[in-house]
Structures are given as C-alpha cells and as structure tokens.
Image (tube, rainbow, N blue to C red; front, side, top):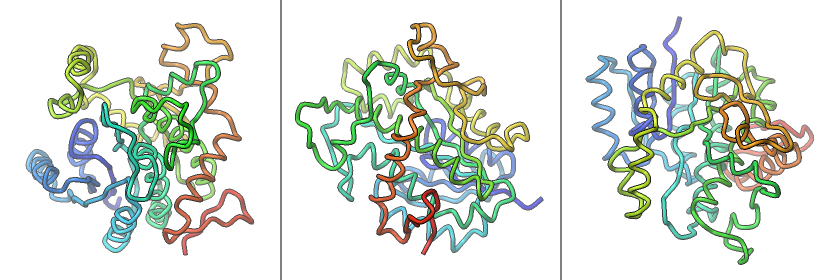
Length: 324
C-alpha cells in the first residue's frame, strides 16, 4: 500500500495537534496547515521527534483569506500526487471580539469556518480524486443545538457588513451561525462528491479541554467559567482518536453525509417538538440542518463568493464544480 497523505488544518494545538501526532505514529504523511508558522514549527518538530516519522510537513495557510488558500493549494498540488484524508479542524472563535470582516470582505467566522473550507476543498479536488479512498472530515460543534429553538435560522443578512442593525451581533451568535452553515455545507458536499467516491462526514464535538493559551483569549469572568468547563471536557487526544477512526477504519469506508457523536454513533435529525432530554442528548441534531432550500442557499452563496478564485460553477449541471 502506498503511503497515505492526511491534511489537518489547525494542527498546531488542541485536537488538531493530537490528531497529527496520532496519524504520524501510524506512518501517515502528515500535512499541517497552520496560520502561524513561527508558532507551529516547534510543534512540527515535536511530532517528528515523538513519532520518529520524518514525513510531517508544515505549510502556511490563513483559511479566512482566499489568496492564502489558493497559494497553499497550488503548493500541495505541485508537491503531492494525491490526498487521502482532509480534516477541516481549524475554526475561528475570538471571544469578545467586535464584528470583523476578512480580507475578502466576509464576516470573519463565516469566512474561516464555512467559505474557506469550501474553497480549499474544491481546489484540492484533483488530489482527492487521485486517492482510492478519499475521506473528508469536518469538525462540527455542540453550539448548533441552539437551532432546536423555534424560529432560529441562519443569518444571511450580516455576512458582508452589518446590514440589519436590529440583529444581535455577539461573537457567540456569529460562531453558532457559521457552524450550522458548515454542517449543512458538509451534507451538501457529500451529495455532490459521491460522483467521485469522495466521502464527507462531520464529527459533533461537545468540547475539548482548552489550553492555557486558549483560555487567555477569554475575558476574565468567562475565563473562570471556561476553567470550570475544562474539568468536564475530555482531553484533546480523545477526540483525535475519533478523527483517526472515522478517517481510516474500514467500518466507515462507504459512509458519507453523516454527523457522528463522540461515541462514533450516527446522529439523527431531532423531532419537531423535542424534549430537553432529546435536545441535550448525543443522538439528535436540529432538523433545521436538513432544510434542502437552506443547504442550497449556503452552497450557492459560497459559490458566488469564491467564483473568481480559479474555480467556476457549471450551472448547466447544478451540483457540479469544474476546475479551470
């Protein structure tokens, strides 16, 4: 068997770092996609030293920046013949931050957590198509549970500037918005990519123990709450094992378009009027994520926002992307 290549974004800390360690220990070629090279280089060296695997490579990428994504993907297509596993682990959440736009004029959390992974995945399609068993895993979040609330819907009005002054613009709400959109995008990707036998699944992350560095990003009182939460959150390596199993096990080789919980059980859309027990269980996600019209709208929005980045949407076949 030829050596397998895995790309993990945000691989310099937390679950991403532990996943990189695990794949390296199992003789995979590990590609670390990270925003801060200076911070990430010692992590790369630590992984090589701990595993004895020299095939660990570090590349700079800012997933909120289209130009950075394009440069990164061009590098990978030049240096690697195929990509077997793509794990979208990186996410943007900066507690207490004011409304902020990416360099491409998109709300920063939505740019990083939705549009960036959409663009990167499509630019890497040639490498994924060259794999005999290509799998994409997207990190979902427990925050989507807010969409069990009646009337809760994606906010499309405030993605390129604040157009609706009456809407709440808390960073928590923007992160929630982006994570639901990313789950719906994952479901849509799984449908589109089936024609190339590329599997796309998501993992529902209830929480993972935060590092001291991450805790420093919180304001004082929220930091105290986060420290208490840390007592109950699993270690990052626990969720990293789930990453590894979903992306390598024969059990999931033909599974696509699913959301898995921490026990690697397939979650189901919740009932119309869920009880609190059902809402907080690990078996259900909000039925809102199944809305075909909203999934299409997320897909079309990402298509429109990225249409000028060496990629075009072939409208004659609605669900087909073709690289230039």
